[in-house]
Length: 119
Image (cartoon, rainbow, N blue to C red; front, side):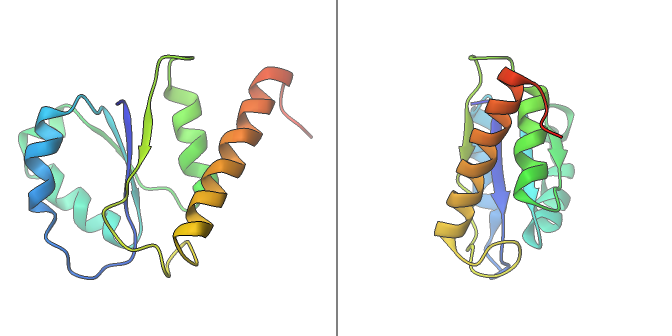
Protein backbone atom coordinates (compact mmCIF):
# COMPACT_ATOMS: atom_id res chain seq x y z
CA UNK A 1 0.00 0.00 0.00
CA UNK A 2 1.46 3.32 -1.05
CA UNK A 3 -1.21 5.78 0.11
CA UNK A 4 -3.31 5.86 3.26
CA UNK A 5 -6.13 8.27 4.07
CA UNK A 6 -6.41 9.06 7.79
CA UNK A 7 -8.30 11.55 9.94
CA UNK A 8 -11.73 13.03 10.28
CA UNK A 9 -13.86 14.10 13.21
CA UNK A 10 -11.93 14.31 16.47
CA UNK A 11 -13.33 12.10 19.19
CA UNK A 12 -10.06 12.02 21.12
CA UNK A 13 -8.95 8.60 19.87
CA UNK A 14 -5.49 7.46 20.84
CA UNK A 15 -3.65 7.23 17.53
CA UNK A 16 -0.45 5.90 19.09
CA UNK A 17 -1.86 2.42 18.46
CA UNK A 18 -1.43 3.04 14.70
CA UNK A 19 2.33 3.47 14.96
CA UNK A 20 3.35 -0.24 15.03
CA UNK A 21 1.16 -1.00 12.00
CA UNK A 22 2.53 1.98 10.09
CA UNK A 23 6.08 0.94 10.94
CA UNK A 24 5.44 -2.51 9.41
CA UNK A 25 3.52 -1.24 6.38
CA UNK A 26 5.13 0.02 3.24
CA UNK A 27 2.94 3.11 3.12
CA UNK A 28 4.81 6.14 1.79
CA UNK A 29 2.13 8.83 1.70
CA UNK A 30 -0.45 9.65 4.34
CA UNK A 31 -3.31 11.97 3.47
CA UNK A 32 -4.61 13.60 6.66
CA UNK A 33 -8.19 14.88 6.81
CA UNK A 34 -9.12 17.63 9.28
CA UNK A 35 -9.53 18.13 12.07
CA UNK A 36 -7.67 15.07 13.43
CA UNK A 37 -5.17 15.20 10.58
CA UNK A 38 -3.15 17.88 12.37
CA UNK A 39 -3.06 15.80 15.56
CA UNK A 40 -1.98 12.66 13.67
CA UNK A 41 0.69 14.71 11.83
CA UNK A 42 2.10 15.93 15.16
CA UNK A 43 2.23 12.34 16.42
CA UNK A 44 3.95 11.03 13.28
CA UNK A 45 6.46 13.88 13.12
CA UNK A 46 7.73 12.84 16.54
CA UNK A 47 8.70 9.34 15.31
CA UNK A 48 11.21 7.71 12.99
CA UNK A 49 8.35 7.37 10.47
CA UNK A 50 8.69 11.06 9.65
CA UNK A 51 11.79 10.28 7.57
CA UNK A 52 9.88 7.82 5.39
CA UNK A 53 6.44 9.39 5.07
CA UNK A 54 5.13 12.23 2.96
CA UNK A 55 2.22 13.86 4.78
CA UNK A 56 -0.48 15.90 3.04
CA UNK A 57 -3.45 17.74 4.55
CA UNK A 58 -6.08 18.34 1.85
CA UNK A 59 -8.99 20.76 2.10
CA UNK A 60 -11.27 18.46 0.10
CA UNK A 61 -11.58 14.94 -1.24
CA UNK A 62 -10.77 16.29 -4.68
CA UNK A 63 -7.40 17.57 -3.41
CA UNK A 64 -6.74 14.24 -1.70
CA UNK A 65 -7.45 12.16 -4.79
CA UNK A 66 -5.50 14.55 -7.04
CA UNK A 67 -2.52 14.18 -4.70
CA UNK A 68 -2.66 10.41 -5.20
CA UNK A 69 -3.10 10.66 -8.98
CA UNK A 70 -0.09 12.96 -9.32
CA UNK A 71 2.19 10.65 -7.33
CA UNK A 72 0.99 7.11 -7.96
CA UNK A 73 2.84 4.96 -10.46
CA UNK A 74 0.25 3.90 -13.03
CA UNK A 75 -1.38 0.53 -12.32
CA UNK A 76 1.07 -0.22 -9.51
CA UNK A 77 -0.23 1.68 -6.49
CA UNK A 78 -2.76 0.94 -3.80
CA UNK A 79 -4.66 3.64 -1.95
CA UNK A 80 -6.47 2.67 1.26
CA UNK A 81 -9.21 4.87 2.67
CA UNK A 82 -9.42 3.66 6.25
CA UNK A 83 -9.45 6.93 8.11
CA UNK A 84 -9.44 5.70 11.75
CA UNK A 85 -11.84 8.53 12.64
CA UNK A 86 -15.56 9.18 12.27
CA UNK A 87 -16.75 10.81 9.06
CA UNK A 88 -19.84 12.56 10.39
CA UNK A 89 -18.95 16.25 10.29
CA UNK A 90 -15.90 18.06 9.03
CA UNK A 91 -15.46 17.57 5.29
CA UNK A 92 -18.05 14.79 5.04
CA UNK A 93 -21.66 14.32 6.10
CA UNK A 94 -21.00 10.65 6.87
CA UNK A 95 -19.15 7.54 5.69
CA UNK A 96 -21.39 7.18 2.62
CA UNK A 97 -20.63 10.76 1.57
CA UNK A 98 -16.89 10.19 2.05
CA UNK A 99 -17.03 7.01 -0.07
CA UNK A 100 -19.18 8.71 -2.72
CA UNK A 101 -16.77 11.65 -2.99
CA UNK A 102 -13.77 9.32 -3.20
CA UNK A 103 -15.38 7.24 -5.97
CA UNK A 104 -16.50 10.37 -7.85
CA UNK A 105 -13.05 11.97 -7.88
CA UNK A 106 -11.20 8.73 -8.60
CA UNK A 107 -13.43 8.07 -11.62
CA UNK A 108 -13.36 11.68 -12.84
CA UNK A 109 -9.60 12.02 -12.55
CA UNK A 110 -9.14 8.62 -14.19
CA UNK A 111 -11.18 9.85 -17.17
CA UNK A 112 -9.19 13.10 -17.31
CA UNK A 113 -5.94 11.15 -17.29
CA UNK A 114 -7.07 9.08 -20.27
CA UNK A 115 -8.58 11.96 -22.30
CA UNK A 116 -6.84 15.08 -21.01
CA UNK A 117 -8.27 17.71 -18.63
CA UNK A 118 -11.81 18.96 -19.12
CA UNK A 119 -12.23 22.74 -19.42
